[in-house]
Length: 81
Image (cartoon, rainbow, N blue to C red; front, side, top):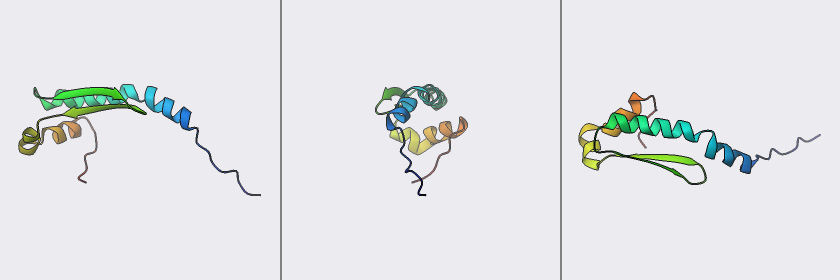
């Protein structure tokens, strides 16, 4: 007897990504932003899921690695492409 194909509940998964994880994503983004210093922009938004961005000036990242250091400090894994 062949097993039934697995069919993910895409709508349900989307709702989880929009609601249950958004608080944690926003908290981590804010922590990273707080670690970066003064010239940082933390933005929270929703696409097909909850999302956040942390932006620092390119020269600050290039000279000090501010964003990389901040992300590592809050426990996020940072990898080079």
